[in-house]
Image (cartoon, rainbow, N blue to C red):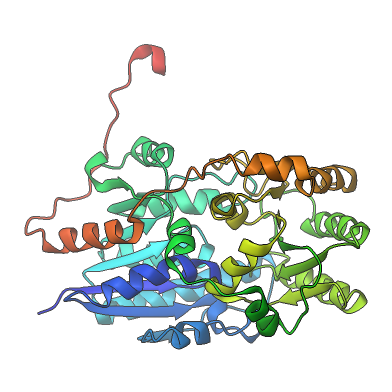
Length: 392
């Protein structure tokens, strides 16, 4: 009987990273199950499951768990639904391995359902830090539920081992987002304009701002500060992608929709661009702006500046192409001026991407297949680091 591998995706960004692994695993001699959930199945967030279908990937199951709410209790309800529905799915399907990526709350619930059903978990992008979001705690929790780990830098690999994971099971494979830039056939500026139905006849920047979930105040204030700065830079156009389904995400998107209507000639708001259009836009952009991980991980491969606003990505390994600023008008404007300056853009051309490593998706697939072929899979045990007294 073929070994069964289940891959779960709940968001557009996550799928863009899982895509090459899904494509390559589909060619292996396994029973591959792709399960779609979360924002993919929401009209509000662009029904992005259609992008998966357009890629020719067979969706085994669509599991709806997202409630139309951007409150903490709404997110908790979605997690509860994910735990119930995926618990039932895993009990029925009994996969030999579950592959998940990242740190979102629905993926934490999916991983918990897998753990309770005694399913080994392979986790991508563990060991990272995002001190401004509760994703940090969720990511480390998923690490503790996982058996096989794919880190994107050597620093992250060490942190996973520090969390008590056996070093033989923790692999530094690099970031698939970087591999996508090198391997995917990106489209022309004209094709991006056709996709967006928006003329890019001026210099433009790519903007994504997600809620900051570990913050006493509101993320709304930060978004409004950012939009004030965007309003000052009238010589630029801006492609803005909508916020995700975290606390305050829906409210942020309403503000962005209003801003687009008021500035329709130079602002384009998009629910989802898909991985190829998004990376292609990044290729031609003057800068990446906001608080998305794409500005930290992918943008350095294009040697363009990133304006990273606030604490959401605080703690991640960064290239020197990143300009960090606090989320107020004056500091964001100062960061914009630096990012758009000729001097800094020239400087960015000399910097390397710390997330780059050859053969990322091939390494992931190879390690998964090796794990499935192991006849005597060791039980997951806590790995104790041999600390010296002076280290404690």
